Length: 65
Figure 1 (cartoon, rainbow, N blue to C red):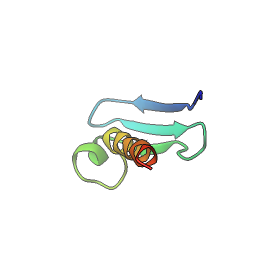
Figure 2 (figure 1 turned 90 degrees about the vertical axis):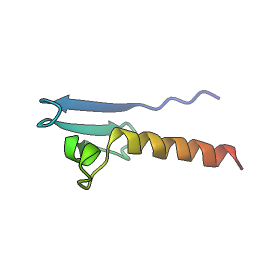
Figure 3 (figure 1 turned 90 degrees about the horizontal axis):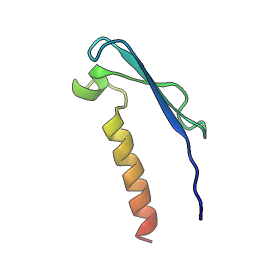
């Protein structure tokens, strides 16, 4: 089984003052914003680690059935 999925992230600016957006080809995420504050300071929003954790959890729950 071949699975092809595409995701993209863009970042503009410096680490603390910059802004980013994450998108997926499926449309589940469409220019969803993320930044320093949502990653390190507890401000609402997503971050790369949260997205990886969710993806890993999804794969694990499907494999354990």
